[in-house]
Length: 383
Ligand SMILES: *Cc1c(COP(=O)(O)O)cnc(C)c1O
Image 1 (cartoon, rainbow, N blue to C red):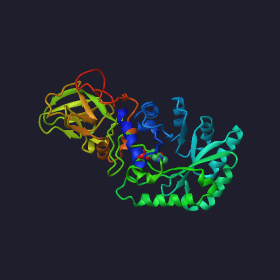
Image 2 (image 1 turned 120 degrees about the horizontal axis):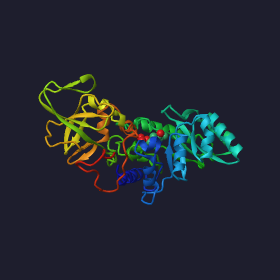
Image 3 (image 1 turned 45 degrees about the vertical axis):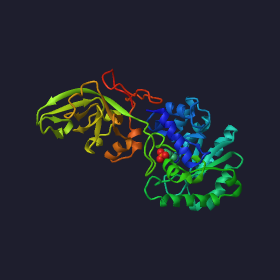
Image 4 (image 1 turned 30 degrees about the vertical axis):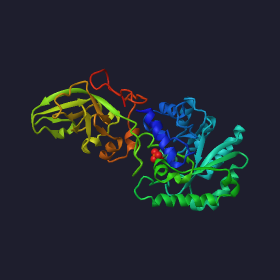
């Protein structure tokens, strides 16, 4: 993957929100499958486009891993942590995002035990439903959270999460924003004044200017996935494998489990050293999936196996074992984006990227370094 483009995308999403905006890069799920260590170093290191305000993760274990990498800044844990994990969160110096009064009380008890003032952010549910306190019950929970936190906790932030900011119609997103503002307005004034707020995912940052809030939480756009109409990032990840075998087959030959594909005429098939065991979804084959070889597209034929994917090379007489096959990325004039692969699989870029398994070596490049040897060479070329 291209770290320089990751940083370019980070800069673009920052600028879209506000000239002075700061990022909470979302690095959950191993930085959307691309490798959290390299991503954190690229975004927080000397070449970073601006020191992140925090990193966002989903779980306490992911937060602990960031500490293991040496990141000493804020870590926000966004998924509601199961009660048993709050103690570990406190020990690792993480900032949990809390969604209910019991968790706030639990966090306050831990603060008392440790003799520390522990920070937390509170999620407001404006329609996402999976977490957060309901926006229109703020008059009940606002004072209750304030009381539970008093003396022990630092109520640092308040946020909500949009469910449809990447859809053509932004009206539901605007409605969620209005609900969030309502909730903020109804918090005790002394609390409200001390809070930082953050609302925008990639899509809302790029398509709604982050509602002017100078703290944004982008994920997919950083990693090269589109975030809705008009929010197209620089591509970041490529997925490449090598041709392992090329063979001429007669009409009537079949390929793959279920023998779902039959050669209609004499054809030239290539076996590529990648399969669903690497995270290449089986659904790609039925969705008309293609790859690029020698700068030309070739169709995937038959079912994708765990370790091997077969392609039709009939139009490519020069292709031979060792050649690079591009499943995501550019080769010559052709390019297959992660969003194209996702569409063919009936899913989203997030699922494609987070599905890439540990068997694929991740290789990190800066600038226009030669991405791959077009022919030969040992092993598979990198993601
Ligand atoms: C994952 C996540 C984001 C990032 O969303 P993208 O669509 O990837 O930009 C932001 N906020 C929260 C709470 C998330 O869970």
